[in-house]
Length: 88
Image (cartoon, rainbow, N blue to C red; front, side, top):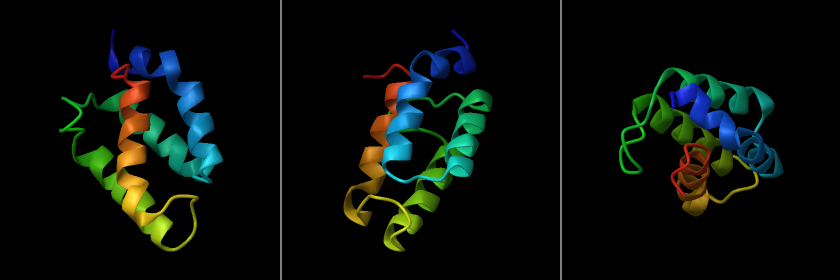
């Protein structure tokens, strides 16, 4: 499967989970675009664009803009990204 085909297998449930965490629709759309253009290598190497996206959401968590704590944000987001890639 290509990266874009693979993310769509579980993308809707991942997007729903992100919305429940109060991640903004534009941030969700940005992640979808990144994942359609760039295939992460492994759980430990998601790539610079995804790492930057996660960092941006962690900053939003620190500012109370998403329903995550700073301590857990990166792990939760990485897990959701891996889920949409089929890396359960």
